[in-house]
Length: 270
Image 1 (tube, rainbow, N blue to C red):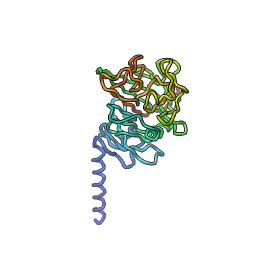
Image 2: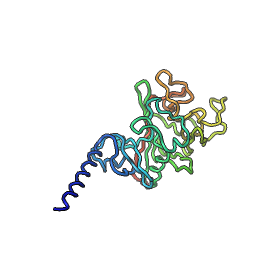
Image 3: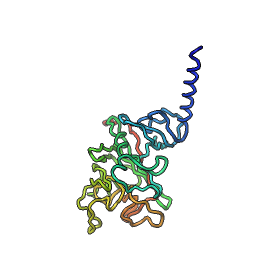
Image 4: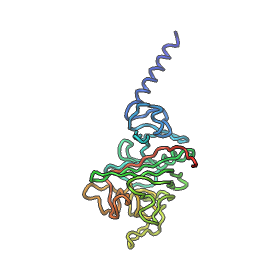
């Protein structure tokens, strides 16, 4: 039949697409699903790796690392394992993202905002921390959202659970980062002016002290985007990969960090 050659070519193209979808990394679908939680819909045997995703309303697809875990499928929004990728960057870099999705990177505030703005979904943030002594800890926050640029990508988190402590709200009153906009070296949105460190040190903004972009209120709480420090030289620095409710009062810079998000079940009143 005259239609058979065209049909055969279509089937071959579909088989090639399926072959790409089952690889550990690489795009799984033209355009991509809206976030990593949909990956198994497109690729039932897909493993953890880099895939193309495209949130609803977003104008283009982009690469993200999808972590297939026992407690869900997560979209990684930040990863640190060393100092090769610099995180002391300006607003445009944090807005659009930088680094490598398969390695150390910041996914981008615009992309995170696009994923979490859908009010029909609830989102969970998970923070994983690894130290230089072989230990690890985690923090999870329900109802995670990031506003759009008009809000300076304002952070919103709900109930905390985990083993690392609630460093976003702080180890003591007055340093709650929930509800604050994002700050970078050239875009100061922190909650202090001037900012006081250790009772007698004044700085103009938290990024002068913590370096990397973050949702600062004051300058002595969580920040996982500061300078990375190697083993033996990772304690006592102003700037670092800090989660102060985890390791006590002395500034401890983590060996590695990861931040990732996944949709929760729709909110139900009890």
